[in-house]
Amino acid sequence: ETGVTQSPTHLIKTRGQQVTLRCSSQSGHNTVSWYQQALGQGPQFIFQYYREEENGRGNFPPRFSGLQFPNYSSELNVNALELDDSALYLCASSLQKSTDTQYFGPGTRLTVL
Amino acid sequence: GQQVMQIPQYQHVQEGEDFTTYCNSSTTLSNIQWYKQRPGGHPVFLIQLVKSGEVKKQKRLTFQFGEAKKNSSLHITATQTTDVGTYFCGSRRALTFGSGTRLQVQP
Image (tube, rainbow over all chains, first blue to last red):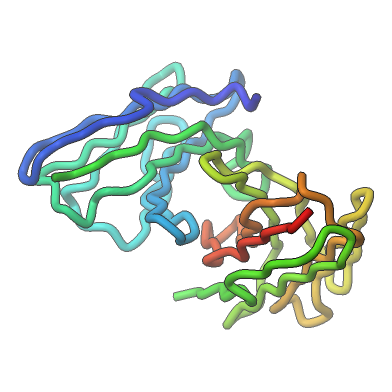
């Protein structure tokens, strides 16, 4: 196991609702990245947080937002959910911003109806 | 932006056969990482390559980074059923992943 935990494991929402997903990093890791993985696709980078500040963002609209807390845990918030937001959401923690191994959590499976 | 393409998308082999997946980038990569994702699981880090022409081995797995640092390959010798999963390459610095190669091994 990587030591990275995510909650909840599964979630069902309806279009237009808002959702918050949570990630607890591996001990000592100050960087967390969030990814969206649609079925049969590779993980798509949403954004990265380093020491509580956003440190890069992928091609996702502003309704995808995040937070990183002083203990380096993190949240991903998605507003105004759309059907296409249905996916596995993965967080990954690492010791350094861009050079170190990423350790992935088990993911949250979000279904939007 | 940077794109990483993987081929093939899917490969079905008999147990004992070899398997290779290729990763190609439109731009030069500072490093490349390989991950394995079992069905229903999450990506698990396998290895990172940094140097031009680098070759690394992990038991039956051989990883190569191209001389131009724009492509990479993963070769599995004598596949086993435990090798089943999707193999992703990714550029750590660009936080970009390929679409993966799904490997199915027939016992």
